[in-house]
Amino acid sequence: MNRWTRPAQLFYWLQVAAAAGLAALTLPPSPPTLTPSRAWAGPLIFLAGNVAANLFPIKLRDLEFTVSGIVVIAAIILFPTPAALAVAVPPLLLSDFLERKQWYRPLLNAAQKTTTVVVAAAVLHGLENGDPLRLDDLQDFAAIGGLFGAYYVFNVLPLMITLTLVQRRRFVHVLHANLQSIYLDFVGTFLFALLAAFVYESEPRLLPILAGVAILIRQVFELANRLRSETEAALRVLVDIVDARDPYTHDHSLLVAEYSRKVAEVMVSNPNEIEAIASASQLHDIGKIGVSDTILLKSESLTPDEKRLMELHPEIGRRILEKYSQFRGGAEIVFAHQEHYDGSGYPRGLRADEIPLGARIIAVVDAYVAMTTDRPYRRAMTATEALAQLRSGIGSQFDPVVCANFIKLLIESNQIERDQIVQMAELRDLREQGAR
Image (cartoon, rainbow, N blue to C red):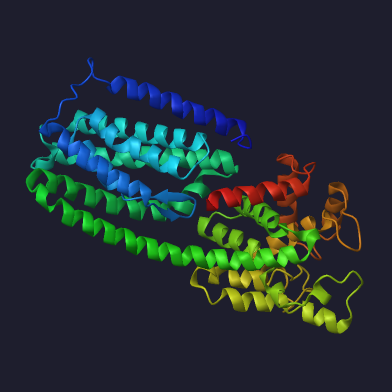
């Protein structure tokens, strides 16, 4: 949390304080009687279900989803708000404790869940007309719709704002990167929670069957996500191997990806294209896995034959990436990242707008990161010297608009004076924390 921006830290504590205040408002005027009764059976059943759901999450991109939402929304419909909170929050804290997450993450998760439950319950009870599960008039439909709308907004919005502030990205890009996964999860949660509430009220003996269906759905999500995650991890391991072969460029690709994403977010309006550029920028050197160390690490100038072998790496990278559906959009970017704006680059001699925008962005960023990094045959340039080199290459090697946007980004974000080794280490730590 020490590396979070000041606005991110402020927003964190604001969420915690708001959640504490909302939780206090839901407390009954006198402590509840803790004698065994049938009224406690339902919340306890749902609490056990939520414990199981939180212990087996599904990770999608930067977020973790569980079937916990089904249990929690059904609990909001069926039970008083304090009981719904008792179902929702303790299992979340238990899961975070068992995963040994850093102290601030369980607190943030509990705060966000508390806010979501209290607000969603308030909307439901404010709109309902008796039993909302009857759905026999428009008010019942409005109450159920308000519940799911409030749950969706407060379950997603604070988290998206937090990620925006921590990652220093635009809110719309963070939201779009995760929106499809959130939307699909939410639709399934909506339908299944309503069904669970109906079953509990009408025929609770069917709950075990419903739980079995939920487990099956979770396994389908898990298998699909595992395939994607393992593919991404395998390709990034190859990139890490390439980086690690040269101690002077270790974690080089992480920094190129970070800068490329930020430039793309300025120049591109389609978030899907931004994601493709960001992925391609991290994988742009994957083709060097097919280049021998004697060429890759050579401190003298390459011979013509060695140069021809080195120039094969964009084609090797494209052949690797186009085999995977989630990376096909970036394969052409990787293939073209060594092209020059005036057509003097390789492998096809493309020029200007013939070169994919993502490749033009990577060309500028990759050159800057390389120039400001120590190499076997020279010391790193200063940021000022590297920027002068970029300016001298405008119109020949580099796209003028991309160059202008990158230089502006460096100046406005105060990145020029930062130690790149420190930046690379921070990005590595963030990626490893995300993996955990």
